[in-house]
Length: 527
Image (cartoon, rainbow, N blue to C red; front, side, top):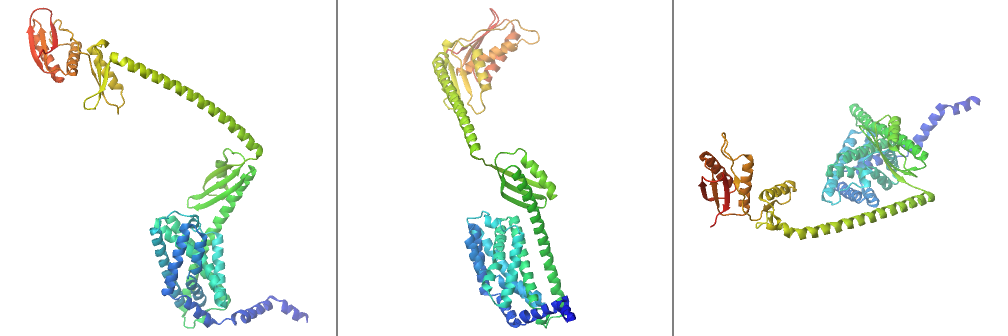
């Protein structure tokens, strides 16, 4: 009796009972032929499949562009992606190469058609901004992978037991059609980061669903016995394919696990810092990149904490063992007392600002009054100095000096040079016209041995008189040159003609005399 009880409680007995229960309640209860035929029918590549792919992807893309969850759910309801994925998983479970090829062909055709429709809709749509629904499908998380695994398990169970297949199709579409539409969006707008992230999410979920279906199918007894025509090489190839499909899924799971661990570490560090400052973390985004971790956080704090961002960045880099780029935005909160103090400070600041504005307004009024008075005085004085007007071709200003101003020719020329030298580059030039007056006599002096012509000072006087004659628009000039020295007379005549020619003033008459003091006298021609 004791030996019999021990035999019943042994692991081997429990193992035999479990195998017998599985055979009687699971394996023997399944009509394998009917299940495989049904799976094959759901994977057919035909007009109905293509039409439903177009409709589902179009609705999903429009929902993503409008940021509408309800529209996206509508696309999930009609997506036909369940059939080829279920057949892919069943083909791996039964080692049937033909079923795998057919499933992959149907799946790839649907993917290409969906991408084409998504790209076309984005090109034609005026809405091209990346919405939150689009950005939410660019990074696979642990929860996305979990949704895919549960969808695959439920899909396999519903297919084998022939129960609730419509609901399971919705669950599978949840993990596949929206990311596939986001891939098309990324291709259309040329954003390869969005396209790559969504493609990674799509492939991760597809592999998780297919392998989950394979596991459930094997649990229900589907295997090599259901495909007697297979060869050993086909079985080897299928097992190898199963292993190869498991590798990227394992890498994706590892990446998602590392990202989740990083997010937990970052959140714990930021929560601790916020609690120490009496605040809390309001929003957090963590992005893993090749060159490190990018963290964007919003903290609700009662007051500003100096140096918090740099300190947190150093702590995160130490705890994650990666370079961290932190962007911290503080939102200040306060209680009633703090609000009252802030309102008092703001009121005092407002009074100070108003006082400064009043002082500035009074100063501006005094300045405007002084400028108006100066303008009036300048306008009153200008007639005594001359007349300011525009030139006939409106290209410059002209200042016609009044005779009462008694401004000499040399001084008038200096005024023109000084004003034009100081004027801004965009301002028009000023032309000064001296008052009509007798030109002063130029004393020639004793001729020099090396040069009998005018010295530098005499050349300045001669050029100033030529400038005045040009400003007066004189027709011709009469000149009297008195000197007993022929060399001096010849040199001065050449200098005179050169100065007048430079100003385009013609000489009417040039009279040489040999008596009196050596001099040069210029005058407007009488005609």
